[in-house]
Each structure stands twice: as structure tokens, then as C-alpha cells.
Length: 61
Image (cartoon, rainbow, N blue to C red; front, side, top):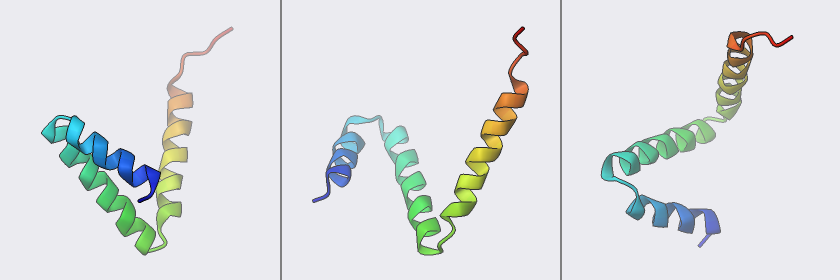
């Protein structure tokens, strides 16, 4: 079994049930996006948020 899958399986048993369920939902969404070749859309949202975060940072002089 892939090391990542093993780690995820271990963590799902360690986390609180609500956290584990949220992670399961996120992973399912990522799998769906990958199946649709739409992960580039997800990256765009991440970049957009990074830009917004930079704009929100106070100026340093």
C-alpha cells in the first residue's frame, strides 16, 4: 500500500470523528476533481487566496 494511503488511514483513526469526516469529504472532492482533470481550477483558487492574503497584509516600512 502506498505510504500516503497508510498515513491517511492511521490519521483517520486518530482524529476526532468530525475531523476525520471532513478530511474524507475533502479527499473525495480532490479525487472527483482529478477524475475531471479539473485540479488546475483548485490551484487557481489557492493562488487567488494567496494574492488576497498578500493584499490584506499591513505595509511594512
